[in-house]
Image (cartoon, rainbow, N blue to C red; front, side, top):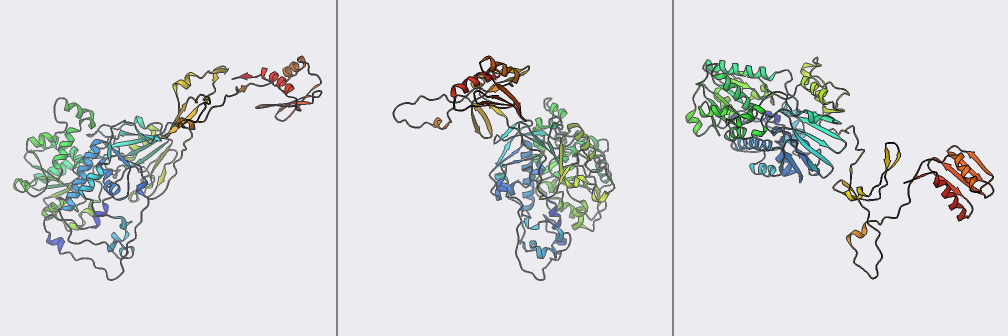
Length: 613
């Protein structure tokens, strides 16, 4: 299984979970069903207990892991890099924390019944597979899920059941993010997901190792192909400065890891020149502290110039200095120290980007009524208009600066030209222009042969077959082989061996020596079930020149010889001896009537013309 991401856009259908009782939200009328009976149907597309291995590409693609490892009978292994696991843990911990600190008074599930769902207001009535929507997992389930992960490093080769080898490669998108190669001895599939060619904080993308792929599975491209990340960061900084100068506050709904490191770095370079050095930056998240620390300790996963700083020794990220100089302060939540330190105008980084839970809900309620304040959306995962819907009417300014460093279509076509896979497989959405910009033929994957596309729940047959297996030969068996040159540059040797197969590995072992029968009954040994080898006749090669063969027969006293041509060769008739020799390309038959002496004489004459082996 390649990745197990969690689609959180379904949360946009729900009301925000406020930390502080919100009269506005709690007084909204409930939706009541007029009639209808309750039953739930469950659709599962695949039995996840049959999955042996899950490969994770980056920490955003593992958020559904606890649902799989804890509730489906899954008993396999999960592979991921260390930063992926540690930062994935932070994202899950933050999610669980946000949901659990605002317990729901009641739970309802009847609305998921298809008959009732049809009566719901849009967009809920058109939502796909609502019966599979789940409540959030617990921290206990998160810890149990993460304990099933095996850590791997870039370029490490991992054997899976001897059948294939998988290798993670740096994908350049986030700390520890990986592309995966799945290969046998003769076939190679590359899985490219969430990759970036831009210079940000992670190690650069390894493209060379993707070459010679039979199939390249491509997904996780940028969600906003028309936006240039550098331009967006510039816009982010200038809008932030403008608001703060006018006495307003800036709210940045974000995840606790990833783009926030790059934003803090850009602001670090920007604040002094923009005269913002006395404006406080607050980072509020239950995992804020761990996230800022992790980014500093995963040195080997960083880009080269950040790695070198570690040996100076200097912190690789400037947010360490922002914290030391008190410009950046981090808090687990709104309560406690934050409320006493809080001063405005300020900039707050907090979650969740969906604006449905987390401390961001409080700030939206707090700052939404003033046009001096600004909310800047940088995460591309959610439609910002839908995220804002429950807070309308809003007076605060809303700026959309989505920063997505993943591959765009120009970069993809360049990458495909360089690595030249035989076939490309990708989601259907990438093979046509976006619905909103149907004229933009440049916003799709263009490759030769055309990409094979797939949709949700579609079964795809990949266009290659396993044709060969590699077989090892034991040294002592190799020693015993005597190659013979049969024509210049080509030598052959015969092999008699026992083929030993275990865990999809094949080994040729020397055949057992014929055992001498011994008297008395002996206990059967384990090796007795290996088949005994018969002594082999030599193999023959070459062809029999008919004219010279007839001369040889005459020299040995045979007369009255007739030669007939047939479709496959020749028949030599010895009329006197009532014998027939049938010579074909791949066989020679001597047919004589019950005269064994004669047959052996003729056989020896035939063999003189052939090479033994």
